[in-house]
Amino acid sequence: MKRILQIFIVLIFPCNFLAAQELLLKDIDFDSKKDSIFLDRKKSVIICKLSSQGFKIQKSLPIEYLNETSSGISETKNGFELNNNWMRTGYSAQFRFEKKDKRIRLIGMNRYEFGNAVNDGSGESSVNLLTGGYIGDWNYFDHFANNENGELIKMQKIKTKMVFRKIYLEDFNDEIPYDFTSKCAELYEKHKSVEMKKRKK
Image (tube, rainbow, N blue to C red; front, side, top):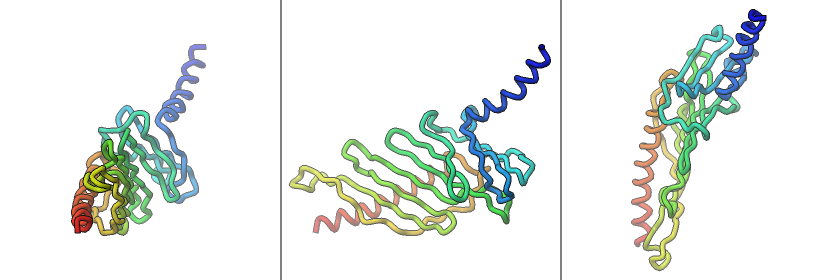
């Protein structure tokens, strides 16, 4: 009886463990066999096991600021993405398997902001790491508009280039989306200044 119980525990425990990590089963390495991608919340890392590589563990660096309730792994057309959402801001990072390199690469990021109480700085942006294409849709609050009652102004869409080095799963941590956020903020302030000057004329 004790032996049967031991076998039962060995068989059932991995299944429960993986289910708790938001397991995604999908063929991302194009060999018609399902691979496993999951978020290890205890270690705050993304873990991938690819069938073409004998299910050897590939993982990200620790993602220090990972929301325990509003983050997770989801399926995309060409791979998977990490979603990490907070109360008034959040981001997603898209990954896919590169056949040539036989590695999982970060190919895109999206982010959003709700801004402050009057939604100053609210909006969203995205960057395609394969092409360097950046698109930003942002708003700012003009306190002097509307007879100084204030008004939320939608800025012109920002389309420009934003270049990143090649980033693979094993390179990914908080610094990558924070770098994206910092570059977005610079573009936002630059274009906001131009638009505010135009409105004063």
